[in-house]
Each structure stands twice: as structure tokens, then as C-alpha cells.
Amino acid sequence: MKRIHIRGGTPLSGIIPISGAKNAALPLLAAGLLTEGTLTLDNVPNVVDIESMLALLAELGATVETDVNTGTNGSGSGFGLSVRLSTPAIRSTTAVYDLVRKMRASVLVLGPLVARFGHARVSLPGGCAIGTRPIDLHLKALQAMGAEVGLDAGYVEVSAPKGLTGAVFTFPSVSVTGTENALMAAVLARGETRICNAAREPEIGDLARCLVAMGADITGIDTDTLKVQGVERLGSARHAVIPDRIETGTFAIAAAITGGSIELQGTRLELIGATADALRQAGIAIEPTAHGIRVARRDNGVRGVDVMTEPFPGFPTDMQAQIMALMTVADGAAMITETVFENRFMHVPELCRMGANINVHSASAIIRGVPALSGAPVMATDLRASVSLVLAGLAARGETIVNRVYHLDRGYERLEDKLAACGATIERADD
Ligand code: UD1
Image (tube, rainbow, N blue to C red; front, side, top):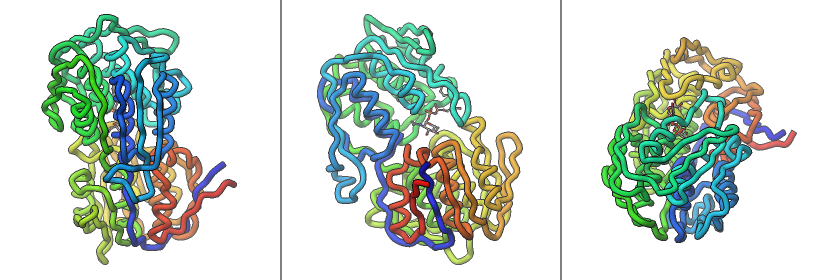
């Protein structure tokens, strides 16, 4: 089994190129199904979740060509892919269990398939390590546009043989992929659709801008009300995926937790607003540079700060485990409250095994900073929890061994290479 070995204690210093956002690239790839033309995406991160999505699209009948990243915002970094997708005709409208089980975001093909082909059959994702994660809101949005929804043998079957019709749909609670599915369905629906209480994550703005480049008519981009005038068909386009704000935040914390200074290139400060605010309150310096941002810890260490996760522009749940790792070595106490997902504290017992002092009371964790963590063999059950253990390992005394590396490979492109380039003692071993 593959593991990552880390010898902690070195302040990291240097440059890290930030990859394209996985959570933007996934819906953008699914959007390729909406046109008979060609969608070319640059700055696609080369991670396992993207491989899974490309495999799903190929199985549905798309032609997929990948190349080294040739787009302007990623070229030269040596990271990422350019992907050319075309789906003149479909072979299947079924997303099978084996693919959906591996990656829940497979559900993103639902909206495009129903919108263009009038039918989709997608395996229900089932439970996962961060709670039950239902897709009822995705289905309600499609039903509002006239789709019929049935359940058969663990698959949800959605059909609209005469096409979808524009509607007003208000999300009762904010859902990122739910909004993306509704938006991708609405662009080919007859008439006007208004999506209210839409998620405002930057990845949704990125999807909307790409859809507009393909010929969609969308207004209200980046707000909580998306207005869509359906069009008959979409055409070809080329689009560069936005930088990954979660990867940016993760490496910002790598600088902070090790007392180092890292320039994160190819990213933008405005993408990490709430994370940057929390880090600054904790005493970390963050400044824009000509090529991205620089994150550095001042000599007086890290202060404890309270954080509550919320939909964008609030503090992202996908950064909760990483900021908790930082708070374990802060001066004073911190309270971290998780409001987006139930059961998203799986990293807590592992951090405690490394010497952290954390108490969980329902949706909140109280972290009392300790002078130092000590390395240990650890493992985690999801992507962000795993990376929080890597961050803790970079700061800990002695050796940390992170098991279940496949979680990290789902969402971080060559994590060890990027950290090692800044002086970290980190390597992958097959033992
Ligand atoms: C996306 C991100 C994920 C991130 C999350 C929250 C992708 C591929 N994944 O996931 O990394 O952690 O946003 O920022 O972009 N819910 C329902 N019914 C639904 C849909 C969601 O009850 O139909 C609930 C969920 O259980 C959760 C909350 O709504 O409690 C928010 O989930 P949602 O925004 O949908 O997360 P994802 O889109 O799955």
C-alpha cells in the first residue's frame, strides 16, 4: 500500500504553482456533453477525480483527448492538462454504480444528459465519509423544469422526452453541484429559468462563463439568482479553468504551520477571501505578488482564531480540516464550527494521536494549541482530512506516515513534489 512519509520541522520556503480547480473542472467537463461541438479546457488539474470523470464521459460516448496544459494561465508550470471533448452523439445515458461510487461528482452528468438527450440514469451515490450527502435538491430542480424522476435498482432515472421547460426554482438550502446541475439543465430548456438561492462559489461563476462562451444566455453570474434564457443548442468553445482556491489555501497553511514563506503562483487573492481573513487574524502575512500571492509566518507565531464554515463567501468547509491542523499549534484556543456537512471531523482523532488537544461538541471543535505535535502513523477517510494530516506532519517533530494516499491523489496534483520543492522532507513509498 502506498504511504507518504514526512519528516517535519522544516520551515518551507520557495514557489508552488497552483493547479486548476478540481471542483471547477468537474462540472466544466460534464458541460462538454451539452454540445455537439468541441469543448477545449485548459488548466485542468491532473488528478484522479478528473481521470474518473473523463472515464465516465468516454463511457457515455464522448471523444476525449488530453494533452499537456497549453492554456495561457497554466503553460510552463509543468502541471495540468488541456482536454478536448466532443460528443456528436451519445452511446449511453447511464452513469454506472462503479464510477459514481468512486466519485460522487459523477452526478454532474445528470443535468447535461437530461437537457440534451432527454434521459439520464445515474447510480445513487449512497453515503460517504462526510455524511449522507443526498441529491434530492438536484432532482427537485430538474422536476421543476418538467423532468420525471423515478428510482430503480439503486439508480435514479430522469426523463424529459419532450425537453425541459424553464421554471423558477428556489433551492431550500445552498448546494454547489445542485446549482451546477440546475444551471446546465436550464441552458437548453425552453424559455426562462430563474435559479434562486443559488450557490455562489467561484467554480459556479467559472462554469457559467464557459457556458456563455458556448452560446448560453445567463445573467446574474456570481450572485445568488441566476437567470437563464434557454437556447436551442450550444457550440464549441475554449476555456481555462480557474485556479484551485482550496489547493491555494492548503499550501498557504503549509507556509503558516511550518513558519515558512511560500509564493503561490498562478492563483488570486480574491479567490481565498475568507481563508485569507482567518489566516491574517491568526497573524499570518498574505500579500499579492506579480504572479500570485505570498504567504509567510511572522516571528510571533500563530494565534488561535474562531472559524465557522459556510457557503461562499463564507469560510469553506473544504478548508476546515487544514485550518484545524494550524490551530493545533496556535497560541491559545480556537473554536471551529462545521455547518455545511455532518460528520466532518474524522481528522480529529488522528490529529489527537499526534499530540493535538481537541474536544468536539456536536458541530464544534475546541482546539487548545500545544507547543508541538509529534509524528505518528495516521490515516484519514477523505481528501481534505488526509491533507490536514500532511500539514500536521510537516510541522510535527519526527516522522509522520500518512496512509491511504489515494484520497490525496483524488484532488491534489503531485502534492509531494510541490512541497519537496519548498524544502519539505516528504516522499511516497510503496511499503
Ligand atoms: C461541493 C464540492 C465539495 C464541497 C461542497 C461544499 C464539488 C465537486 N464538490 O460538493 O468539495 O465540500 O460543495 O462546499 O464541487 N445537500 C442536500 N441535498 C442535495 C444536495 C446537498 O441535502 O441534493 C446537502 C449536503 O448533504 C450538504 C449541503 O447540502 O450538507 C451542501 O452540499 P453541496 O453544496 O451540495 O455539496 P456538493 O455539491 O456535493
